[in-house]
Image (cartoon, rainbow over all chains, first blue to last red; front, side, top):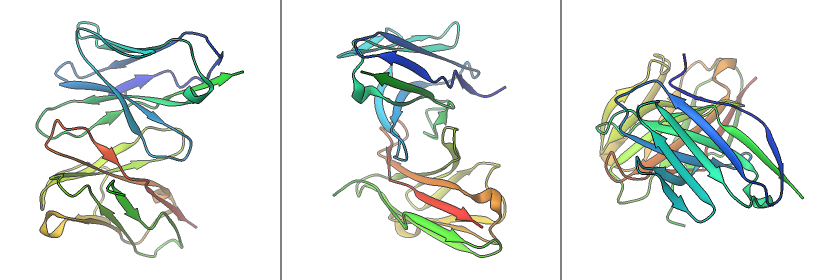
Length: 111
Length: 113
């Protein structure tokens, strides 16, 4: 079983749609959680951290359910520029800082 | 540009050759990480440094791979006797401490023919 699992998609949605991505992680002791965005042939960039209380950044909302070991990302009012791969990322230990990435979910927003 | 830089951006080599990649982290970052990414997959952790000390190596890092970070500044990743399975994007990231945001460099794309 992979440490972080995501549906690779692709998710094809029209502009303005709301889309949700989910991911599960296997290590219940994991310390911190993130969503990264990666454009084609570019490096990953931090989109947002994910907190237990849930957090929002503009059109993006992230949720964490530690009991179910489940992380989600909701994108409202999708823009063409949101087309990218979204990587669910877990830091299993606060000491090392190493990140465990999911496979990524590809989003294609169409006009 | 004060971000993470990597050199070269692309490397094509023949099987059996040695290659070396360089990463220059953000100057005040004491943590430096190497990851490898293959097509359709997320990045996989290889190794990390705190200052000049290499503190962890993934089992993905076979004995053909070696990484250094002399003086706690730039880092090099060397692959000896390259194999076709080494073809991937090699990403470097740096952070301030273990909980700081990791900033990634543009990567070195290695193709082994």
